[in-house]
Image (cartoon, rainbow, N blue to C red; front, side):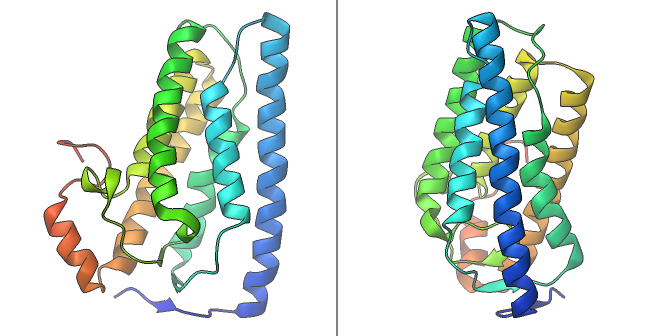
Length: 210
């Protein structure tokens, strides 16, 4: 059985929340600067779509509303930051598919993710919680469409920059995003509205596959 709480360790949550916000902003700035420096050096855009996505996610995280019923499971608290932050440690390396093709695919992933995140609005958060059931737009295709957009954008970034480090980071991010999905669904399993929604939308991440 999943254990949830509306106010688990309130003082610790405030401190950790502040630290997480500062860390995310710093990590995003380092990621954005590395890609901008590559663009300036080569004359070709590098990681444009993924940088836009990470910037949007960072902004939504900083300005999100307080969570409602949040999981207190340790795995949920580990999976959320690792799944979210891992790819900001990636760096441009070149040597992959042409920049133009990669950027188009990244932007397609970004577009899908942003539509999904805009549907969430300020209900966005990192740790698994019941912030209300969303069923509109891309949520009619898969149950976690923002993560689908992330995956598309990240895979295109790796195709453009296929270094061993970046590939390892993609693997880490993907594993923990899958764990994050499982943790979110454990929390939401107690919601009748979500159970009805899950019966209508079968796939979690990739239509016809998963």
